[in-house]
Length: 133
Image (cartoon, rainbow, N blue to C red; front, side):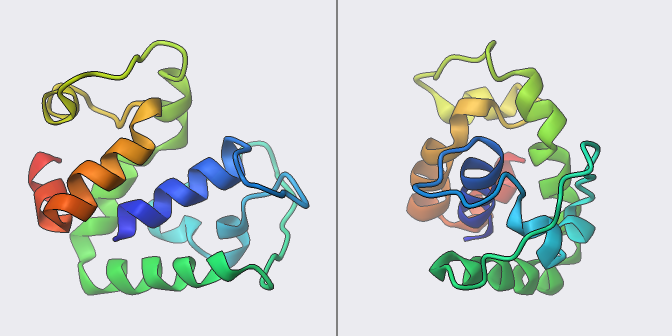
């Protein structure tokens, strides 16, 4: 469920949707996640550690899934680049057909997060997501 975990990373840390945020710094930058998907830190965000949070285990799962499939990291990087997410943040509205919406985009739209996780990954599995990409 790697996309599920990535969505949590982005929603929690970059979009400010975490229930309680003790800093404005994404945990995965300090956890080494950035090296796998080539996410830069252009704003020079401070590193932090929230290792006491239960969600920290998700970053280890991300590492394992990417290690197991060398092409997965590159695919995710292409679709989950933060600049692309933010560039469409105000432009995209939720579509009735998520599959068609994803096929016609070079990025994952800002609103896709929960729908992508529930509809494709959890319902159809990671292979279905990879086929769409």
